[in-house]
Image (cartoon, rainbow, N blue to C red):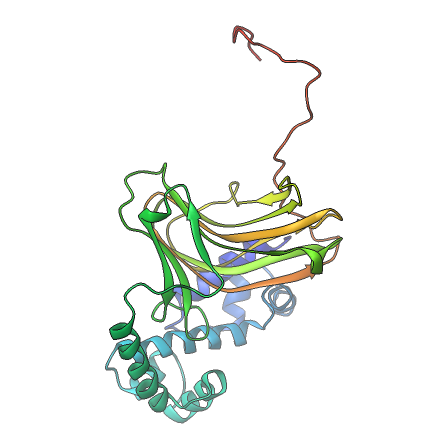
Amino acid sequence: MQYEGIINKTINYIEEHLHESLTMDDIAEQAGFSKFHFHRIFRTAVGMSITEYIRMRRLANASTALLYTNERILDIAFHYHFESQEAFTRAFKKYYHLPPGQYRRLMSNMLKKEEESYMDKQVKGWFLSGSDPFNYEMGIDREVIHQGKASGYLKSKTVLDSANFATMMQQFKANKFIGKRIRLSGFVKTKDVESFASMWMRVDNASDDVLQFDNMSDRPIKGNTNWNRYSIVLDVPSDSSIISFGIILSGRGHVWVDQLTFEEVDEDVETTNLEMQSELLDEPLNLSFEEEI
């Protein structure tokens, strides 16, 4: 995506300044664009205006504070730069369909019941795979979220080194996207990732041959990162059968994912496909390993 680096830099800047006053002029300046031009770039890439995005992220953090702290609603409202408790309540109710006080009471009770009833929950639609899935854990996190009420997570438990990896993944039929170019986008956050984490997507034919693939190996996520938006763009050829996708964690660490979306894109959107195979050789080469490049 043409402006992906700038968008990621901007989102990271927003994450680091959510508790402060954020103006469109400041954001556009650090991105290096006029505010009107950057407004269009951001909306096209993220699907909402910068103002809407900032409000959504502040409300998501506020919802976490409501559930996991005893802070007064007024203090939470001011902390996230709402001018009054009434303004905060109106905005919160628009996104979460409940006023903050009622949300705190109802959701806190639900969380207590879930914690008492479930020790190892499955995640609907997702399964755990990889080289050592038993050394990892996947689940739903209602405290660390990007938007809404929950995120998915994958974390290491008894991982010894970077040779171990696991993926939280799904598979579905390619029929709906045959002959199209599709983009998988999502928000990812990491903590203490020693090797790497990334989104990935793969398109296979009926014989399980890989037709298109990207695991972000040329742009891995490492260490501690705030929520940021990542994208994978692949073609779905006419002989495609299965589309697989997910989040991969190599080695130790913790990765969260939220707001995954699939969409068809135009041909002028560049693919991120990694070339998996080179052309076949006419005959084997360098079988004694004595020839140098």
